Length: 432
Image (cartoon, rainbow, N blue to C red):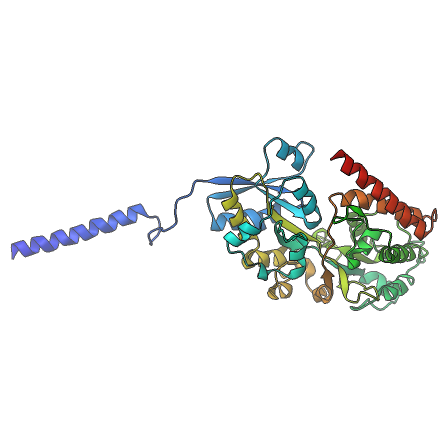
């Protein structure tokens, strides 16, 4: 009997000691099965701008939550940290955020690799993405340069106070440019001598987006501006910008200047702009504005522009490809994309229809606005951009300004732009 009591007591003690040992070895109630990883810090070069708050929300926090051993460090473009300088010095970042228009140039500089083998290796399902933004990151040879994580969009924004002041019905969805111009002409000087602008379209370049145009062709490395579509863009933009009282304040008009004028001066009745919502902050004292569908060209109904996406890609110089792929998968996951559309008003490149329904849901400034007007238009696939598209755009801009000022007719403006762009491309080719 004593021997049995001894065995029972010993057994109980052994079980207790084993339980204590397990408890000391694991902080949770279940044994950890996660493999150990050495901490790693990945640098992310923000060629496509991302605010500090959005970087934390959409990049560093979600990655740290799923992979605690991965830390992301943002690197912003500056005089002493240009991407080409970093690469030349052997300090290439691990990841790059870039506008899709920059991808060909980055690949030609040897900064990017075709990611197709990696995407296949990590079982990335490209069918989750909408075909248009996916086409924007894919070369004509089938090379995939990265994954889109957000898209800008075009819409019409209008000042309800001014429409009420002039007794004009608010703009609705489904307008053509002719409809928008007819409305714009109704806004004139008020009794106090204040000139109101009926419609700000910002630039001829933005007006070209629904045709999917570029100023230089990335396939042929030649100018692609002297054609009927660019002529239509030039003529329509001039028609709008020469409405009496609607002339642009300066030829250097930009999206930020137009949006800030719309919000602060409140003298613009209607404005078309790519994604200005980042300027619409919760502390704005004035909020009596709304959204309508982007006006259409008659021959491009319900088209608001071309794909204008921001892309996350892995630098060729990264020594942490495995961890970088994990970051791409987290940022383009349904969970993070839902955060993005709800809290930052980025259009998601995913096919998931929930993304449109939830757009701006956590942004008080968008409460009660005609959000779904944005999604009544579609975007077209972008052209194959030249690595020197920004240089070509500068030449196009000057040609339009000469035409707007009456220095040349539209055909001469386009021919001069074509000659200037071809000369610039030849010079760039000779330098390389």
